[in-house]
Length: 97
Ligand SMILES: [Zn+2]
Image (cartoon, rainbow, N blue to C red; front, side, top):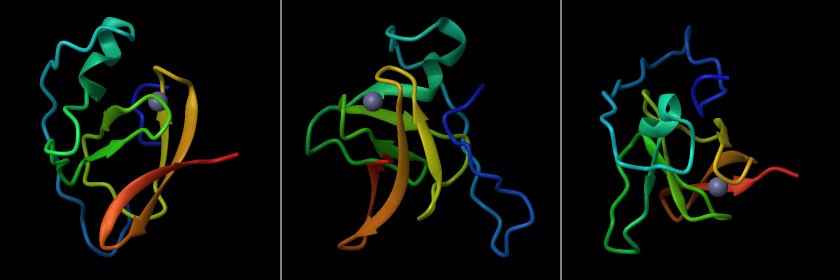
């Protein structure tokens, strides 16, 4: 597993916006995965279209592609499997049991 986003994203109707991920200084995962996560700065910290907050460990998961409802994510810091849902017009990650 190389990236948190586990959904197949090719062949979709609307192409997804792509993002370049920079080093975030997040050090709770091995170096090659660090750019996929960052610490959340609390409610004023707005997430961009390629980011989702892990409800378990409050770490922001970052994808190289725009996230959409139904996407499956893996949070390496707490080993949770998450699914992206839309609630009140916002994208949120929920734990998959
Ligand atoms: Zn987590």
